[in-house]
Amino acid sequence: MVFFSLNRIFAQEMKQLHPLHTDIQKPERFTYPFCYEPHPLCQLAAKEVQAYIAHHAEIKEDADRGKMFGVLVASPPAPLLQRGELVFLAAYSGLLAGRNDWDYFVPPVYDAQQPDGYFKTREREISALIASPKGRLEGSKMSQDLQLWLFHQYQLLNARGETKDLVDIWQSYYNREKLRRKFPLPPGGTGDCCAPKLLQYAYQHHLHPVCMAEFWWGQSTKEELRQHLNYYPACRGKCKPILTWMMEGLDVDVNPETLGFPHLEVKTIYEDPSVGYVDLRVASRGEVVRGLSLLAGTVCETSGAETVCGYSRRSRRSR
Image (cartoon, rainbow, N blue to C red; front, top):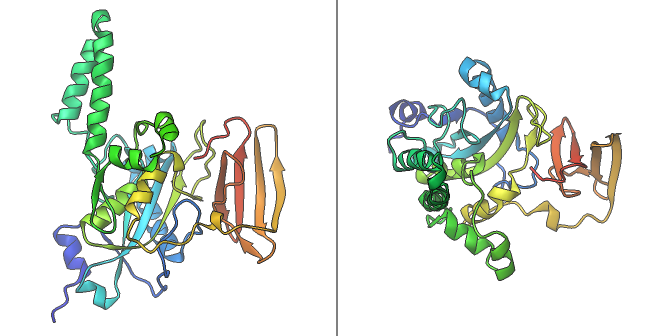
């Protein structure tokens, strides 16, 4: 049997696939993205992405203002799989320097940024209508319809090869009447975070996801507590319904939050009226819990061998 080099495939068509040369062993199961410790494979991939950002001025200038990036390590399809080679994908949340088409990173699930595409054309029409006092009401209704149309364009895959659009995923997740009334539709920007982009591209190109992690680059924002190069869980507000669907068919790590922690040792290491940091360990096993949500608004990050959890007293908002 003839085996083709990964480098040849990269050069031909898949610029978003990057070889990962390492002897590090793969994890047994895929990452539970809402509470995890970054696997060494993801840390290795993240370092390569960070080096790429640092050496590309236009990307770095925008990322320095604060941007979430993600990496997904994957096994290529046969025949490459038989050689044990690994690749990684990289993604950013939303747009990067006003673009969603950087070759190094995976593309969006749906590209709504084409200037002559339906979304942008319709958006310009609505903006002109809203600018007129007599057209504001009609423009507002058209804007809502356009947003709904956009959600339906996000056709998301899971590991079984099944497809659902964003509205169906959302309403299936919030299937109880009370929850359906509270969360009738996804918020704007849903589907544009790192994790959905990474999984979608992996499934489309017959890659088997191995592990995944997200890290922050740049300044912290006014709304959210973030530290440069620290790892963070996937957001729950937008991504929990989507990733629950997209991970169907994958063998995923158990959610550590469901295991129960009878002996938590929580030590406050810094506190002021607005922000607190705690060092959290499971005393019964001596393990570090990463990404554990202590309180509404908790954000956990890794620092060396320890976990640091920061929680905002003001906002009480999760990532």
